[in-house]
Amino acid sequence: MTTVRVRISGDSMWPTHPDGTEFDLHSDDSMQPTLGDLVLANHPFHSKLQIVKRIQSIDDGMVFLVGDNPDPTATEDSHNFGSIPLDAILGVCVPREEHDD
Image (cartoon, rainbow, N blue to C red):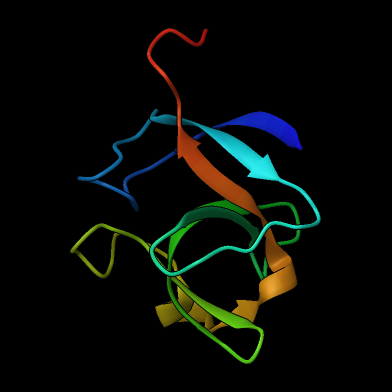
């Protein structure tokens, strides 16, 4: 399994995960993201942009991603760009342990 550090940039996951929150990204071929998981995904319209969002639904290999921010103008998610293919998910974000630096 590959593990890399991911840092939230912006307010789309606020208040649950404010700007600067760090996660370990877990990804491997057997990874099966589930409802409620926080994931890193490729943005469907901006090839160089990766986004951290929560899985709201999975249907027929398509994933609906949402930000945690209750202000709909504060996050660009599947409400804006629709569902994305499951294979656009790069990994699951897992909270970092305080002692991991």
